[in-house]
Length: 160
Image: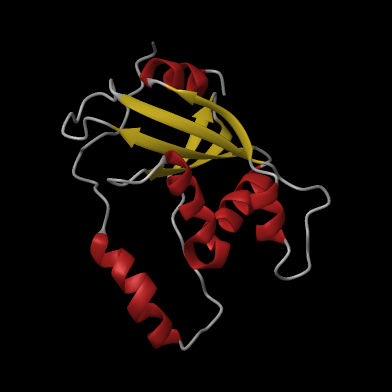
């Protein structure tokens, strides 16, 4: 382990006000219809370089891991999966959807009873330029890597 400090819970939390402002008020101020924004959950970083872009989805109560994966490409007509693929392509790294079924969500320290489904978003080559074709191709070519427990998922991440 090195002496680098990992920034965690230092009062720099998710800013709901900015998120609401950017999605709701900003478009009204600039009168723009083509200024989109979305968040990417994680950029995995190794030795000063990005190695993967990850979008995480929790399987909500009564829903399956497949439902969680499907929500990524169904949200806003596929905008989230398109964003994930485009960011991964532009960074020249892999893109993944990670669906999490957590049987003990009250445990804030571990995922000891969780299952992680890892799906790779296969970046098409050539990259489609015709409007409306990218999302369908991304969904069609999603590649299941595996279902992992907490230790298995940690090992998957460590090998990126």
